[in-house]
Image 1 (cartoon, rainbow, N blue to C red):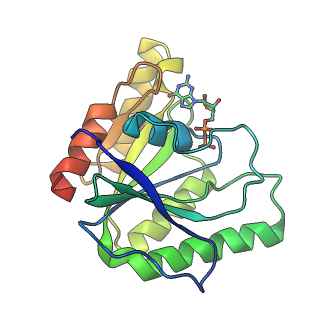
Image 2 (cartoon, rainbow, N blue to C red):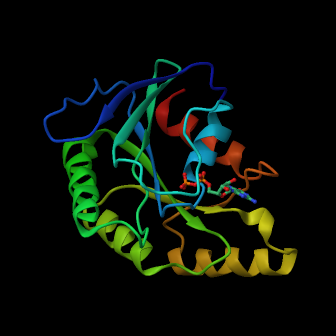
Length: 194
Ligand code: GDP
């Protein structure tokens, strides 16, 4: 799939806002803060659409990017940043809950990003339990895989594939080598009719 056009059509901050028309469905990107989500969105679209940074502190929002006038990439706020206040954490939970409740019917695939260098973290597990409970389709993207040596890389891929079994796709990915990028885009193409 070639991405020809990208347009940020809607940013949702609260329950008062209306979601955009459904189009051919939406592909969701979620993960811990700093996992490389913005970088992945920029890599997939070959544009600088999402701000990459080492700091959290951005107001939690759900961003809808319209792709090729056909489907959406949905950028959910990153989770698990220790320095965020309890109030902000609650707001994050509400905004994501509201998103899933409002749009579950239009979600074609959720890409859950986890840092390929580490084993699954507690808050990733919570997110996965949540997705399973809601019966939402998701795949695992192992980010920053270029940072691993060959042997460690195979070990981590094996660890994640064992953990998730046959029912979930695990995609090793790197923004540096671009490994995994075409696999993600192919999945979008197959499910989104692009
Ligand atoms: P976000 O908070 O999840 O949006 O994370 P960012 O996209 O801002 O990335 C966090 C940091 O990880 C930045 O310094 C990126 O340059 C770096 N990063 C992201 N993806 C990769 C990758 O695949 N490989 C390497 N080596 N660094 C990455």
